[in-house]
Amino acid sequence: MISEHLHNLIFGLATAFVLPIVGFVLGMIFSRILGGWRVAKIRRWWTIFCLSMPFVFLGMMITRMAEDHFEGIRSSWSAEPKLLLIIIAFGVLLSTTTMLALLRAWHRSNWNGS
Image (cartoon, rainbow, N blue to C red; front, side):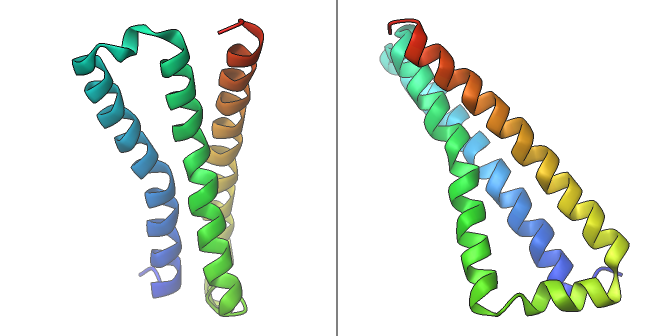
């Protein structure tokens, strides 16, 4: 069974990456209803905003963990180090993918003249 600390870490990572996706989809639907989704500049900047949100959420998670002096991570490491490494690796993979997508969207918005 997964410890409470690992459960909270998994929930935090899932929230950090799922909420921006939900926000992106809702914003896209709202923008399509209003007709703004046809404008490339609006699409790009909304995409950049939503791709940057996981990093804001991860920063908030790390700040909260630092307030507790990372006790949850320490106890998880002593109890289930392999599972913790898998969760961390998955978080790094998601973060790297998101960062590459963010850089791609940013590069397009700066160099296309829009």
